[in-house]
Length: 376
Image (cartoon, rainbow, N blue to C red):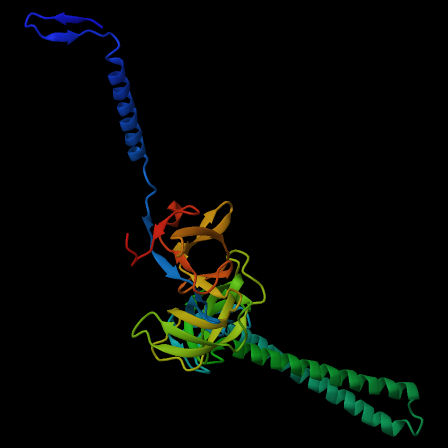
């Protein structure tokens, strides 16, 4: 070390190694500050607020509601039993008809001629029968006297039997001709409502060809289509509630009268007919109605909101809140049918479990969450 006076007479120390300890302290301080900043920059995991619901036991019964159409139990396509030309039609679509009311008429000209010919055939056959009978009566007198042979007698007896059979045939043909004349007038065999007209006056129709469609007014039903997963839980005679969409939406009681034995090949649903016990005056054919059916279902004992269920790893899962650790646990579940209050869970949950019901697609197993009511 050397002492050297400056111009002012002040002593100074000139040492080349005197700055090194200060530099080392500065570097250490900078490293410490950098480490503190690194620790402060490391973000902490955010706590996600969630909406939750408590798992409840599903009711043992549930209500199925379907849309249906009011129909008649029997719709008859009515036509003439003989062929001919229509000369009159007395009803139109929407008309109500009574038993025996005339619906349409055919031209009776040819049918009347056939009846006249049948009557003449009966007279001719009766005459032949009478002649054969007289011949046999004379033969009965001549046979004991051996004036005629037994063979001649048998021949006259056979002629009488053939003539009698011919008379029966002619009389039967006459009755058919008379009936044919009556068939030229189409009458309603039951009271009902005309729902369709398929023939007009002047048209020539064949026997059995539909002229009008008549809906039976005595029995009114509601036809519904039931999915295959529910059709097996229904039974004949099961009560149902029918509510019309129009008017005051009054409800009437009914029962299941018929369940189709085979599903519709297009819709894969089963046709079910609901018989209405006392249809109101406002219930008209073709109206739309809602049918409510109550069924027993104990296959899935738990129920959760539909928004609590999501897909993960090829399966169905829900996120159950672990209240002690304030995290969520991804839980695989087995689902059942959709219910009014949510979806039925067959397994994987217990009553009282708390599940997340919103934003489940953004959660992961073990994520920290905060349920409503908890302080941050």
